[in-house]
Amino acid sequence: MGSADQHGDLPTYRWRQAPHGLATRRQLRDMGLRPGGHDPVAQIACRRGKRRAWLYRIDLAVPKLPMTLAKEAALDRAMEARQRCPRCARRYTHCLPLKTLGSCLECHDGTPADPATYFPPPADGHRLAA
Image 1 (spheres, rainbow, N blue to C red):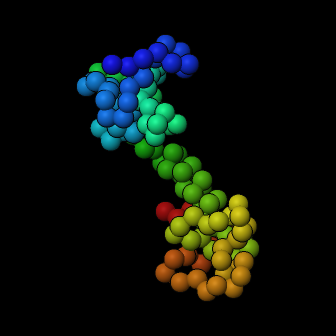
Image 2: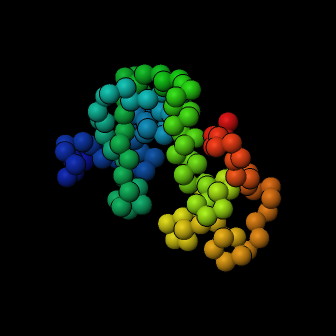
Image 3: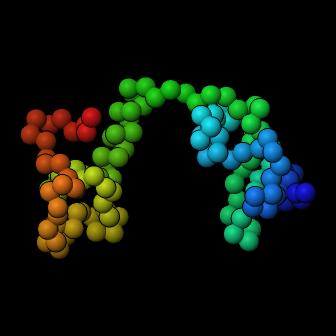
């Protein structure tokens, strides 16, 4: 069974030892659910106590909210910020090392980019991928 810890009085379980009826946020998401405003009821410790995840009651979880066009557009803008090179304005299909290099590899050191991995810069100012 779990024990009390420094994060309140929540019981702590070891990896794969949590009782049935409890799930992490990721497990709830895979079931099409979300916590729905309920606080965690326990936590799970893994990697020798260095990592923790909150556990929520499955019976109190509610269905996930559907994706709306506004949410989809916001997510696309967030991904664009990570995928578009500020120098050449190409949008890549993967996230760029902007924190370390500040641009795509081609702009940084001349390493040629595979044309299948990026979209050319927009001609009309439209920057959404969808």
